[in-house]
Image (cartoon, rainbow, N blue to C red):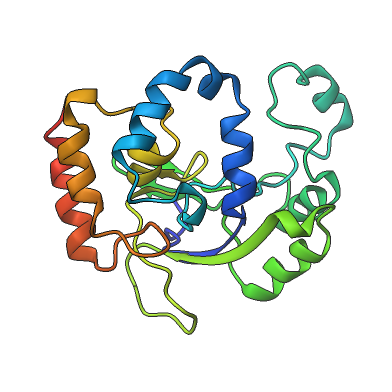
Length: 216
């Protein structure tokens, strides 16, 4: 029997400046600098360094408490050197065999980065080596009321790094970049984004999802 799906919680994410610095220094961005420059020109109404959505490399628990397993998997495990202390505490909190799963369209998968309560998020934040690089945000996908200021609405999914249509389309293209012929129309669609480069309403987000799905 699968446990209840999680619809709300907190994540520790890179601040926008730190995120964009890392992306622009990446091999992917350097190899596609001309293409990226064309997107930046077309999307001049947006400042990528204001993006406060979900696709910001959230902190995940350390891969395992089994040091031998870590040694064997060094070549395949991701980013073992990043925020080691906080990630080990995160793993201790969750347990080695965490059974919290996250529903998505093709089945069940669990979101390693989701932190259920704010006190735990603050504890992990305090354990960071570079807390100035991070911020805590609350995320929700069904119940949109919050006790905190609402940054806006992103659209995508919150597993495997928190994929965002906004981010992947016009800010940090990685998987599904736009066709250059669509840039003028896409830029027009982006004019409704708020100061955090997010949609202000669920209706705007859903409308963009329909537009996105109409493209090859």
